[in-house]
Amino acid sequence: MEYSISKDEILRRKIAYVRLSISLLIGTVLVSIIPHFNIPIYIYVTIALSLFLIGAYSFSFFRKLLPVKIVLTETTIERLNNKVNEEYLLSDISKIDIKYTTKNTIREIYIELKNGKKMFVTALNGFEEFGKELLKKSNKGIVVKEIHEHLDFDHPMFYTLLGLLLGGTIVLLIRGMNELSARYLIIGLIICVVYIIILSIYLILTKQITRRIGGDRV
Image 1 (cartoon, rainbow, N blue to C red):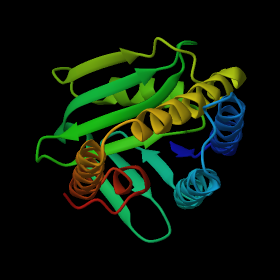
Image 2: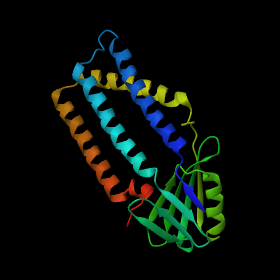
Image 3: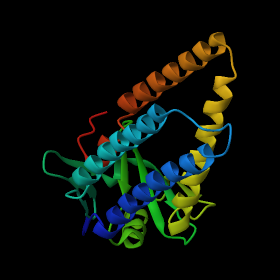
Image 4: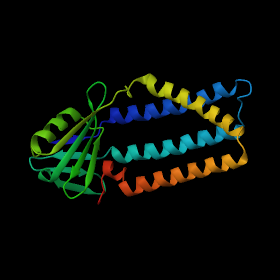
C-alpha cells in the first residue's frame, strides 16, 4: 500500500506559521505602545527578519516533504523521494511511538529499528489506516508507545494567541534587559549563543529533517 503526503496538512502547517508570525508581530507592537515599554525600531526588524528566515527554512522543508511516498508491504516499509529510496524490514522494527492529536488522529509516527536507525513518518494521507497496518504487520513483541497531545495545536486560534503572548513576552524581556547591567547582558548573550550552538549540533547529529524526508543513513 502506498501513502502520499497530505497537501491539506502541509497547507495547514504553513497557514499556522503565518498566523503565528503575524500575531507575534502584532503582540510586539501592542505591548510596545504602552508608555515606558516602547522598543527600538531595529528590534522589530530583527524579529521580522528572524521570522522570515525561519519561515523560509520551514517552507523549504515542506516543499521537500511533499514528494515523499511511504510504501508498506507485508514485509517492508519503504520511503521514496526524488533523491533517495530507503527500505527497511518490518521484522527489524524494535519500537514504535505514535503521537495523537486531541481529536485522536495521528500526528506523527516514530519508528526505531534494531540496528539503531530511526525514521519519522508525518503528514500522511490515510494516517490512521497506515498506523493500523503498520502495527498489524510488525512483530507482536515490539514496544509500542502512544503519546497524546493535551492542547489542540490544530485550532485556528492556537497560534494566534501564542503569537500574541510571545510578542508581549519579547517586549517585556527586552525592557527587563535594559534595566540590567552590562555584565548581566553579556552573560545573557553568552547563554543564548551557547543554546543556539547546542541546538544546532543536536539537529545536525540527530538528523531531524532527513528522518522525515529520507536520506538518513544513521
